[in-house]
Length: 123
Image (cartoon, rainbow, N blue to C red; front, side):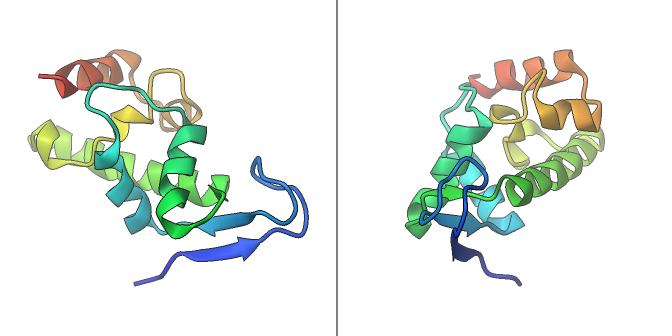
């Protein structure tokens, strides 16, 4: 399994400036961070990247790596949900991948489906 790495930036990138520490997270890092988000709350992608980076002592996360992992997690969880797995048994991607988000649009996810998952999250 791949480990997360931290890069000291030599130029501005991913919302960070030169000299800051950028985490390149793994899929496992992203999946582990999702349950740490508040039940029923929506978290912006930017705030989520900060949450993922914090335990590593980094200033932020690579947007590309984070989004790639979120897409993979979301696709896998949606397949599990379609197969009858309950919401409580999949990573709560809907706390970040929300109706209208870039990832939801890219994966062509139904807005009503995402809203219902978020609504069910507080029950």
